Length: 374
Image 1 (tube, helix red, strand yellow):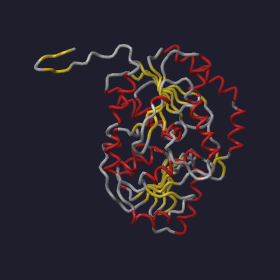
Image 2: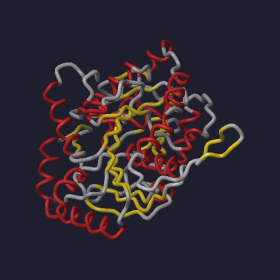
Image 3: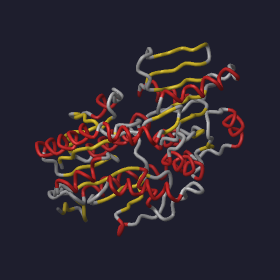
Image 4: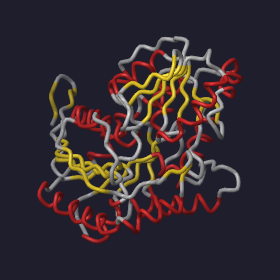
């Protein structure tokens, strides 16, 4: 099959999920003919995506979350949507034009905002599968943070809008849950890149910190000044500093670099992250305890953190007070074996759900009583 990806470029989770899916589908004999990536005006997509997707990458402007003082700024986010509306309309036309030129057999969307709108406006007959952890929040058995009914309604409306007229939703999950085929909701394991699966975990004496926005570094620095004896290696997206920004002997900030990040993840004592689903999954696979710090006013991350705690990933905190992690570590129970057992069921599930839409499936051979039956 000729398969085209539509990928939300904010953060790194959807990008790495797309890379992992491309590895699985190529291994099954399918062709990834392109990856269309939406990103905020002025934001750069990490270089590792082009290096590892091994396909033509097409970029377009897409809505994104605005941050202020380390938290999500709802007013600025909505203002940016209105301000850049002409560019977003242009992006939608660009997506349509590119799809017409490529003529894929299947589109796989990794929570890209335009996906559902594209289906509605252009009435495409190309089947679409939507993949994201956010779709799990549609599940009636998903546990939401307390007093978050309105937020859950809003995010589910967004998830439904992003998957309007899609043929299937694949909901990535830390753990196994019942699928709901009648509601186009299939619960599947996480997507992890081959590079993660090839890592050999070690345990060195430092904490690894990953943040979705460099403004969150202020909290890290404040805690570090009180605890300079704890070694911290941090990754951020700040563009106007060197690739490695050494604050002092025990605190360093690194521009997002896939190989360097994964190397440090494999050897760190624990991970501190802004509750991104992908980062927590990688840590669980490698047996690393996680402290999850949801971005303020970011409901998705609040859900990720709570779900991660339920799944045994680690502990959650409202701020980058790493003392919470220090107190938690003696009580952590390694969940890596259980997580890996669930994860390794994923490849067959993804291939099965994709090949349902293959109009010309390859002829499979089965050996029966010494004969080959086609």
